[in-house]
Length: 439
Image (tube, rainbow, N blue to C red):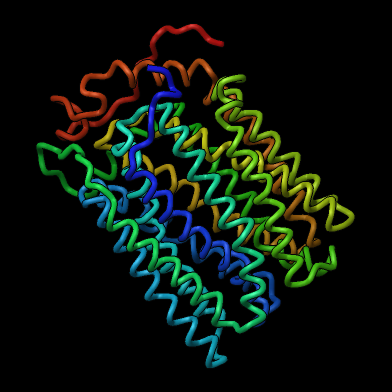
């Protein structure tokens, strides 16, 4: 069967719709939240606290959350998490309407939204390969569509809408995001149930969590795929923490202009998601991932040196293209090679490494901007991204990728638990390399 003949199942359309609606609300809040924080304080460290709070749940509960997702029904986990986030946003909306918003309240809401995102994102990552039977071609196609829709909704439509809605009232963008979560929950509830492997032997939650983390750290390819976003998040959160202030003070951009600046990044992200499969075919997935990492670092360097909003927008668009391609190629590869019964834990471990790094990036950005200059965090971020490119290049090479895909395709049961595997209590081991020709 050719790749063109493979069809995505009808259930994918509902998952696609749910994530698109939710991403639209995220885009609204992505632009509105830092602007809301600016109405409360202009202290860079206070802004860093709000930014970092949303990532702390991954630091505190990341691996355990993955183990719970592997125990729970993944579809139910998604809609319950979205429903809870919709209800939560009523609190800051009421505070904004009553003019009692504060940095502690915004930080607490960001933390709880991050906790809900931990369970939703982990469950969605584990649900998709089950829905698509771990077909690498379908996974790449599905992730490209999900990433493209997410970028269009959260990048193109969301930020300008968030800026406009904030003009109408401080509570309005918060209520819009709550509505998006509610609609997403309804769509997720209609998704088809999928079979998933159930461990034969009941293990403690902590032992299952350790098994998932061990699987990532013992496999150089999975570790390389995890380090990319981990180091990247240090860099990107350092930039994001000061971006609103940088745009206002150095580029002379107002509220609506800031939303358009984020839209420029989304434009590149949409292009990157669209050409990710082409890059993977032409260069090999490993080489494509190396190239996108280098592009991201050079683009942030260009942003730091940007003399006007137009150059800054172009730099963000190029950076977005690199990120868009990476977010299709990396997750698709991980979903194709990780056994089904470990998918939640491996996904949570990888995401935890990325998200745990983010608070350091947020505080690094705030500290560098306070101690030196508003451009300093951007230069530091560019240096981190370029250094990460060199460190992970051999870990995510074409040879390693092809070896992992071959091992996954020939594994007994295609990811189902076998006697003596991690689901029965043993410590997981990395796949042994097979001899395949490098590209």
